[in-house]
Length: 360
Length: 197
Image (cartoon, rainbow over all chains, first blue to last red; front, side):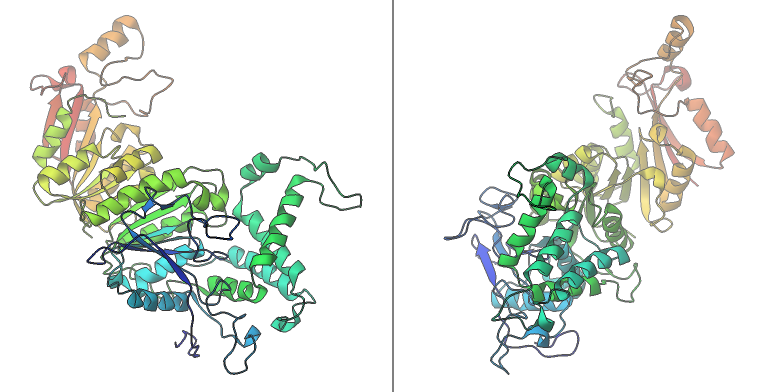
């Protein structure tokens, strides 16, 4: 596959899972795309897994994405470390893991690979493509790159491009990884991984995923009773939580993938020199944009910009700002509201376009 | 939010809008009017509504709606993007009715405005004899808990349209679930106007 940078990457493996069955016309397929650290395992409990899929409460029989009605596909991204080709994969030229020889990848590259997956599955047109955060960026990319391959799109808690503040948080995370002596310019495979650096990066991430209110509710200023007896041990519950999350992340994620994917997120700019008026011009798909009131990492105004672009292009759009105190994490937690919106929205998409596109 | 039970106001609005028109409903509530317009008039409909709960109802009806504050304006829409812009029972609830109506008449070829008549005779009685702010079927809220920010009469609105050079193409007045022809400023609970600029 030729990447947006012009470099060639291949052969490529793309991990995916499917739930439910395609109908005869193969018109009931939904593509779910995940956020930074997600994977193709969106629902159910697989053998040997300690936890069910990451959007388990949205995907399944009778749920928001009803697997009795829809053929749900969840695709991993290239550059990742969850079964798809990424920096930890074996470079066929050297027989060793790519490390930093892995080319820079973009959200566009991830979506191009997903399109090949959709081709492979024999799906002409997706009923919808849905995702939050980085997944939302992939949804926007689908809307622009393959408008004729989707009947609707659901970008959630996302943005058309990162602001300097959003890039800054990612850069601190990358610096933490690269500052870890075990990182060794990305060639740590087969030896100790940059665990501390990656854990700190994840801790920063988790702070940005929560809100002031949700942290206060979850931890308060409570201290742990089983504190280790040394200075600066994790004393406050919030410290313990972040350390636990950080350490846990190291077990399941590759540090180089973290660098590549966060960079792809920072590079993402759906406008890419185009005007807001033109970006979704001609898009026939119906769009449902969802944001959350307490999300300060991807604030609602960024979703409103997406809505504005849709309006300017005369795209049939619905926008809902869900009241939640969970911060950015709300897109994984406020499932009840999301379910209502998504269920009805998909019914409307399936049964034809009741309200018609607005005239502009 | 919108209280008249049989919605004579909706009947009037249905009668004003022709088949296949494009309609923007500002403060569309749970989308009852828009749904009827789509069913019966096959309009291209878009709603704007500030309440999240109402948005859920609209989506359940299969409508396209934006959760937005109409007081912040319709700047993104080009001039005359819609055949009709509706402000039914929202006109008196926005912070800046003057600005919102100006915008409605910019992005719509026509605007439809509906509001409770504050000087309906029952309201006058309560005010005059009771010495209290009226609470009537069309003005059902107590003063300390009302979404209505502006209190106007049918006469006020007509004068306002004259002042702003707004053309009243048609009007309808509604009393207790029926049309009022005589002395609307006294007997109508609701005034409805079809406007153009």
